[in-house]
Length: 83
Image 1 (cartoon, one colour):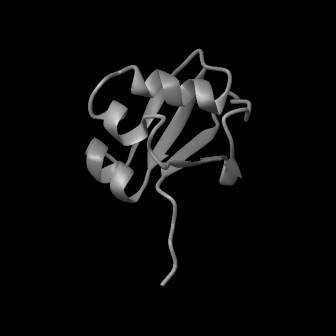
Image 2: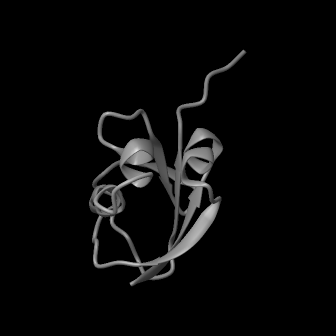
């Protein structure tokens, strides 16, 4: 399936891009994250399981179990702190 991925803040800086279109066979948000990490650097450093990364599916905060659909929008970003 085709989907659109957006990267924000430090994740965007680490990857050197704000968005990309991806063709994937991943069925869940967690599987997509693992697929991106498997690409190697810089994805492994920015999105690795040890990293604090929040995820959204179609602009709704989601967890690893969220089911992907054709044409959906995924966003990865670091936790936001107030101040």
